[in-house]
Length: 359
Image 1 (tube, rainbow, N blue to C red):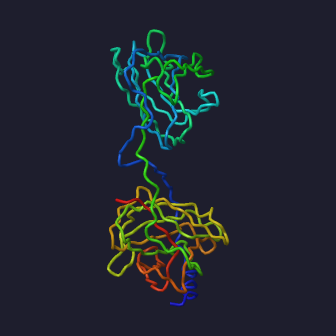
Image 2: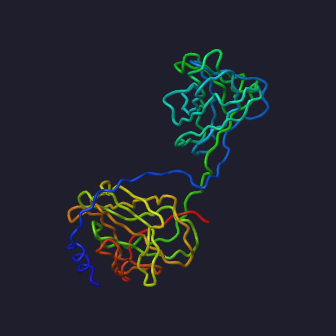
Image 3: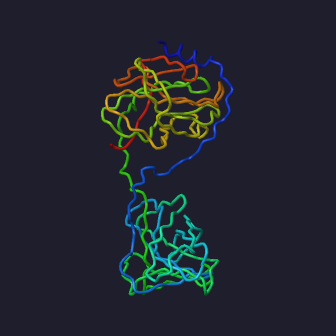
């Protein structure tokens, strides 16, 4: 197939009007596997009160970078203190809380036990926050609707033994803070298990000499056959744009007996095509594929690209090798009818990298 003829045929295809899709960003960890990172949870002989403007905190310094999503604090109550708010904040050069909350969680303090031994209260931090290694943060707890007869008690250990932080407290609703190096509050700080760096599996990333356009009805794909079973989590494609093509959607699909993309998306992700470069040097744009998908070895799949908001004046271009491609585990596929049917081009290979984690 002559590459100029292919581009000409694709450019003439009319575009069916499409509404822009709303894109939902989801970064939640689905497997539920959690890890205890920083903590001080040994036997404690004492406790600290929190109510109204009396806030308590514990600083901590992660040994490794991670996302914290949950804390556990040993607490009990007197009376009915109402809602308890727990948050993570940064600290200043003096090791005291500073700035806005980085992540926040709440629970009903009236449900805490009234026995002095307390219980380990789990507090989910909505959205969580990424923590840098060897950087000091603080867990803050407050019960602002409480008073001297209705308050929460957070157990602590004295003398202080946790080497990577200290107890801090405020008596004016967080306006000013003091550090108390004589005690450590009992805490556990949890987050999802950190995955190892992704592995590059199948790829074809040299020899590009032309580009195919992606817009409206015109979709492009590259098939590939994993040599090793793994979970695909992202792809990188060599791209640029003309005009403002809008959202570019990338998905992984199965292939049929003829090697064409088929069926529903196995996983997908999006990127803003309007932020791609308009000329060389082109960009190896990374697209994260949601929760990913487990790929089987020696089974052919397809990376499918579409820009439904694009048209003849607003396109994404995907670089391709049309001269001497050497990727022998797949090939370029094209559709001029939004993926309803596909044409194989064994003499072309798109520029791609597919990344993931071992099973």
